Image 1 (cartoon, rainbow, N blue to C red):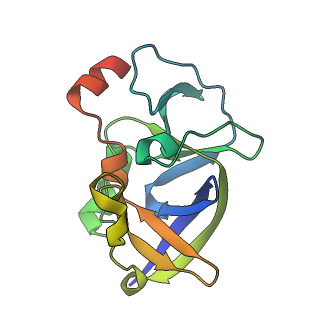
Image 2: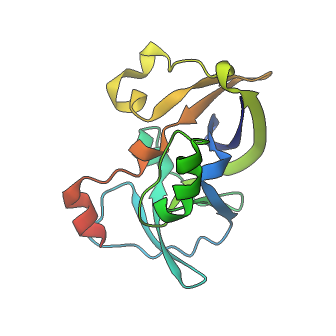
Length: 165
């Protein structure tokens, strides 16, 4: 079975998520900070009347915070309501959440198509913290692509969710 991934960079590291999880990629980064939010939450973004919680993906997965630059983008994820038809059909094996979430990334690269069998388990050196966010890796022609486990990235602990709401 073939799978497609949106690829992007956090610093110089290459990451990807299943294309079916992505609602849109947006260059609007007028993010309003939220007092008391977890350190990895940049703030809120008003996307055509829809409030989106923006996560600094670098901070969340432990590879450093993102400086917003001209090539920075917000990868806006579909919420669980939008994902229900994909989950029912079994065409995606990851989940988002009930709210609109955006992931701040350094820059968006491309969409790649690979066989599901090309996804290797995450490397052992990632350890528990970083390893929990990794679904696996794909060796591309040029480098290693770390496929992210979105359900872990968007999983707020109950105290964190209360601070953002």
